[in-house]
Structure formats: structure tokens, C-alpha cells
Image (tube, rainbow, N blue to C red; front, side, top):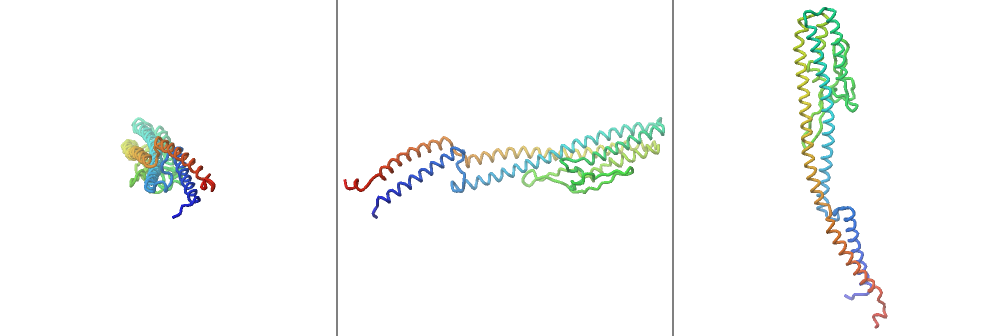
Length: 293
């Protein structure tokens, strides 16, 4: 095949452009620190890096879910502590009211105190977290699931559980429903105590001290379950942090550039480009007189 001057010129220019494009890629790698930026760089590594990023996104979501669940758990811990304090106060009132030396008038005053405690417990039971009712099940927009008409406490929420996915295949329940709170026998014990004080029923007042102790134990059971859920989420977070560190390391090994090698390769390409540029320039300057001579 006859090789013409124009063919030689085209090949030289094409080689220069390829050399310059490679230098541009090396410059980009040095600037971004990434060896792989698109599937054309290395399809296998690019796909592997995409899987690593997807995993990191999942880990971040798990961490957000855990943080949300821990926030709920901390809020429940605070609320349960308030309930326990009120139970202690009510128990002290019951002990005082069970004293045979107390008069009917004194017990009526104590009944008013218990009524105030009932109103406080209902108010606490209607607490919210981030604008959501904490004891109304999944009906979190119901900001007053408990109501008190002076005779009984009524619950209007549902019994559904809320959960958060904190790792692959692991969901943690994060809420205590109003039904579970009612089943702790707190409201019933307080109302019974108020009635016994109002009717000056000394023996019943004394027996209700044990009922208040049972209510306190039931509340403690709910709080223990809440604490266990928080512990699970915290341990899961710790494992995810470790796993995330490992995946970040794998991602770095897959797509990060070795800057020392990139710079050395760029310098070599630059020298080759300058030499090729000089050669091409001389070749393109040839004319017919050069061939005649």
C-alpha cells in the first residue's frame, strides 16, 4: 500500500490527540484523586464502586433510622421517669391516708391531691415527640389519645407498633402503645385510691399501696423493654460504623488513584508528547522542494 504524506500527517495528528487525551485523563485523576470516574475507564471497577456506594447509602439510612429510634427511646425514658415519680408521690399519699388517725376531712384533701396526680399522668400520657404523639400507636397525629372525665381515663389511640429498620433484616420496635400503658394499671390504681380517700375507706386505701407497687413494676417493665431496644440500636450502630469503614476502604482501593504513579505517568506522557509534537511539526513542514532535493 502506498503511504502518502497526507496519510502520515493524519496519523501523526491522531497520535498527538490520543496522547493529549491521555494526559487530560491523568490530569483529571490527579485533580480528583480518582482513577475511575466513568464506566469507560474500567467497567468492572466502576460497577464494583457503584455497589459499594449503594451499600454506603443503605448504611447511612440505617444510621438515620437508629438515631430516630434512639430519640424515641430517650423520650420514653424521660416520660417513664416522670410516671414513676408520680407513683411514688401517690404511694406516699396512700400511706398517709391509711393512717387510722387521719380524719375524713384530711382524706378529702388527700383525694384532691390524687386527682391532681391523675391529671398530671394523663397530661404526660399525651406527650409528643417531634410533633407526634408517643402513646397513640401509629396514629401519631392524635395528640390527645388519653382523656379524663373526672371518673375514668379513656384511650382513643390504636394498638399498632412502630418499628425502624436498623440493619439488613433487623427491625426494632420503638414505641409503647397507650393500651400497654393502660394495662400497667396506673390510671386504675390512682382512680381507685382517690375514690377510697373520698369515701373514707381506710382498709381499701391500705390495700391500694400494693396496687401502686404493681403499677410501678409494670412501668419498670415497659421502660426495661424500651432500654433494651435502645441498646440494640446502639450496638447495631457500632457494627454499621465498623462495616462502613471497611466499605469505604474497599471503595478507595477500587477507584482512588495512586497520586505518585499518576504524576510519574503524566510526566512521562508529557515528555513523549513534546517529542512527538516536535517530530510532527517537522513532518508537516515538508514540501515538494524537500522531496526534490
